[in-house]
Length: 361
Image (tube, rainbow, N blue to C red; front, side):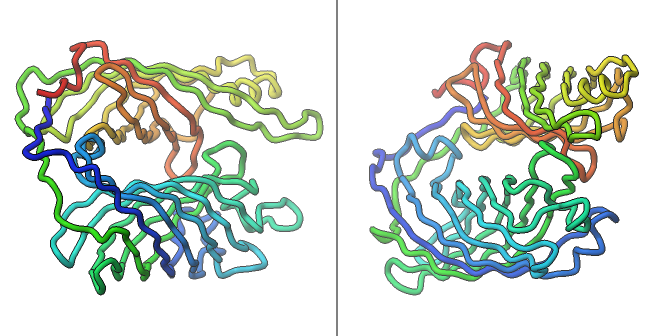
């Protein structure tokens, strides 16, 4: 695997920052169900604060300098009667891709909580099938460009891809996908300045193959009926995958997983069908390794599914942080096309080789 090397003394400087930006965009109508109320232009104002550390230990997380922070603000969905708006609180990480004396290019990913002023109601607001719970979970990715206009002030121009849903905790939950452009200002103290140069050894050896196992858990609500009350359920599952490194930052994977979705178990109980609620799938996908952070996406194909799923295939996304060489923890989202089915936590254990990813050299 990849080793990390340092060519200079570690810098302990912490650059604190505060920022503000205004956003404007459009909703992506990803389903015919929500298409009639998708023709509006979300806009919002967001405030943020955080810091950038130039230490070697911080650099190892993404193999890059990066900013960590919190963001809060309000989005209006430009349809006050049906969609309303959302107050958000999100954390983010923002690695630097390129920088010089005046220009900085970064990529940002974030996620958190949102509170919605308008949600689905079968009688009062049936058209809003984007959101059915007051609390949902926004996630986003952004490409950001900063231009220094003063010693410690940057003008920022950003493009955001946003997704908000409750992760399948309750239905209907089509979630909202919307893109925005943002213009704002960032203030750094002390001003950003050139720092030490760290670099990664990108050599990949032919033996860079790993077998890993993981466990997962998720919470989901089964809606009430005329007979049964609303019920919360805890689902669980386990999986195993083989991963082959092709680059120091990229690998492919293949494996299998079993998920016991206890929301399905409750539905089967109510229907009286007696079917098995467990599902088994084979999986294949890819992993992106950013230092200690790993983003995985793959497709699953059911080979055992007594209670019929919406589709025979699903997609799954994982974001993990590596603790040492043999364990990582993070979050996952499982979806059938545009419908989120499960969102929860997972833990991975790297079984072979025991040093995967390799220790520093």
